[in-house]
Image (cartoon, rainbow, N blue to C red; front, side, top):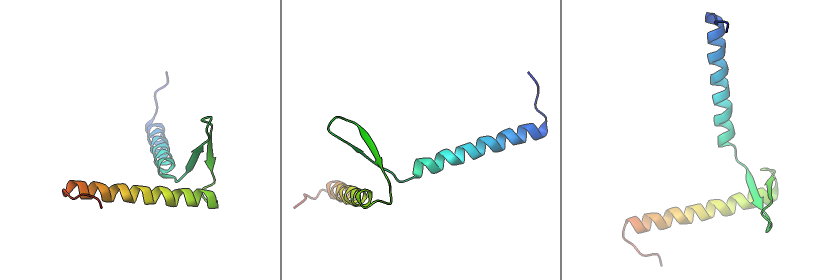
Length: 79
């Protein structure tokens, strides 16, 4: 196996860093995935009206859960 020189090692490190950045960006990307009754998945275009409606509904659901959790932590009952 051939040993890398200094520039080869730096190049490999930069390549590894670039790959990590790409994976992090992909992990933060917004996407909407729906499933039919047979379990087949479909990814929607995030700019579509269908995807926007699904994201809004999901955000409302998550906000409601966060509110319920806060109320529970404070010992309050939800009306």
